[in-house]
Amino acid sequence: MGDCFNIFVPHCSDLLTDHLPHGDGLIAHGFLTNLARRGHHLHVAVERVDIREPLHPNITVHQIPPARFGRMFSRIEYMFRVRSLFNRLHKQHRFDLIHQLNPVFTGLSLSLFGSGLPLVLGTYVARWPNDPDSVASRGSWLSRALALGRSIISAVQQRQADAIVLTTPAALNRLPRPHAVRDRVYMLPHGIDTDLFSPEIGSESGAQLIVARENPSILFFANVVPRKGIFALLEAFATVAQECPNAILRIAGDGSALNEVKRQAAASRCAAQIEFLGLQERAAAPSLYRNCDIYCLPSYGEPYATTVLEALSCGKPIVITDAGGLPYMVHEKGGRRVPVGDSVLLAKALLELLRDPAQRQVMGRYNRKLVESTMTWENVVQQLEEIYRQTLQRAASRRQGKDRSEVLLAEVQERV
Image (tube, rainbow, N blue to C red; front, top):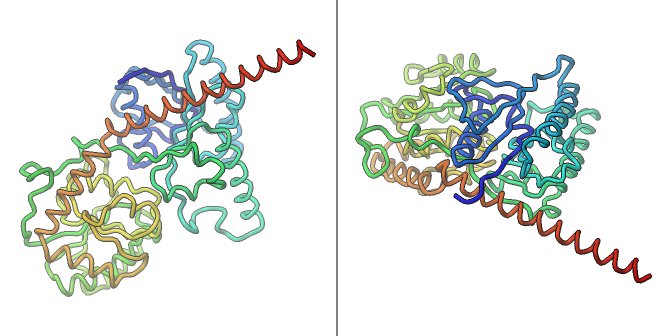
């Protein structure tokens, strides 16, 4: 396993959780837990915590509740309190490095400027294209100014980092000046608990033994919002239902578009073939995947889909869009990729797999083996440890070079 490090985490996610359907919080919990299991000691600052199972003893959480006076003031206060926390803890623990796990909190690491420790940022996921939920998409001069300011702060933050970790090449759109930091960029996928997210008992060669079910099903498990492609899926399923009258579409999740989706579904000819499962606890997720035949997420630019990773691990064939981080997660041997918003090609891809149980089995087996070889938490954390080692070596070389320069300068001054 090599050296064990003392790590200060100034921000892992707005919420640290082991059970709520909060992607960033669950991924943060996975990274922290698996680093701790390998002997590393972590002090973690976080705003909110909702944990059911006790954290590993190598993890110490320092909760910093958000301020009450708006998001901007909350972030500024958080930065000051993080710096104060770091100053106090560093005297006792002598940290080896700082790792801001969730760097979408733009500029947070600048509060630790001058710490003298190597800084790791990431993992970054891709930015949503034209995100309708962001302030910057509103078109006003203020939103454009805020976007420009965020870009400048991000560039400064990344120039100061010793390592920048991306989940996929799509996440390069998080880097305002990628050429300036390209020597410090690493690719690292998120990990998955392959014991929890596994094919059902009785699977063959690492993937569920697929038979011709009487009612083959398609699962959509995500926030029910337009940018997840739910309306394109409804339109595509209308065609699917005509060709496969025994097929079922299951929609699991909640969101702002749920009522409209239900209205459109009820008005369609295939209403009896669409089931709404509602908001799901994380504990229910493995059985949702195991009980479906195809997992479908026709998102309009998904940054990095945890549900896709979970479905891959459960040995399921995947149908997704060729946008955002998704095409880097799903190989053509494990699923089908279609253009964003193209309900015709989406229906064609779904029908192809619904009609061919053997192909679904081959794809599911491929996906499970892919996850087992590259995306287990053990594999991912080992890669992260190597990033830490390279970062520390680079920082040490830089310090040695600086020391040599200072010695040479002192010798020149003495001769003068």
